Amino acid sequence: MNSWYTVKVKYTKQMEDGTLKRVTEPYLLDAVSFTDAEARIYEELGEQIRGEFLVTGISKTDYADIFHYEDADYWYKCKVTYVSVDADSGKEKKVSNNFLVTAANVKEAFERIEESLESMLVSFEIPAIAVSPIIDIFPFNPDLDKELDRREMTEEEKEEYNESRNPPVFTASGDDEEEVEETVEESTFTDESE
Image 1 (spheres, rainbow, N blue to C red):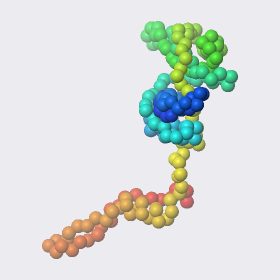
Image 2: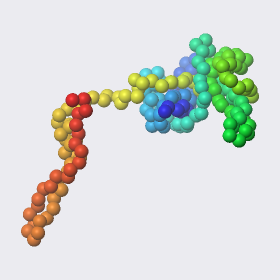
Image 3: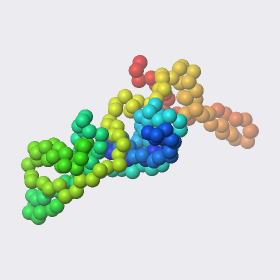
Image 4: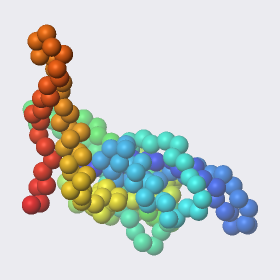
């Protein structure tokens, strides 16, 4: 199951006035692990950022849902709370979830969250809305889940792989120091597509 990861990237950015400035910007990625998030950020930003960039931090981020509207560029983090009742004990529990929504201002973010969550069966409150520093969001992309430059192994590579997995074992037999080769039985590489 995929989760959201905030990845901070440091690079030299050309500002609107033409000057160069070293900046650190956060991006949100849908990934399966920290390693996957790092690999995906290099793939996603490799063509967008000129020059080198450095991943300075990756953290798992909990968002219940993300609502993207094409007409806005700013992301707003909205905290939504509601009361849940435990069916067994009957106790009430306050639950908080974070959502992201694109909007032009706080008022529009509030309206869009209300609109997006109107199908919820329980009443909810929106106690906090704040501008998020997130620059861009990269949702799940199945094409990037494939390893880059993966190709089928040649016959020579398959044999070499099998030999490395089954090294010969030498043992001494009796008093004479003659070496006898034995093969270690392990699974060998087989091409499943055949």
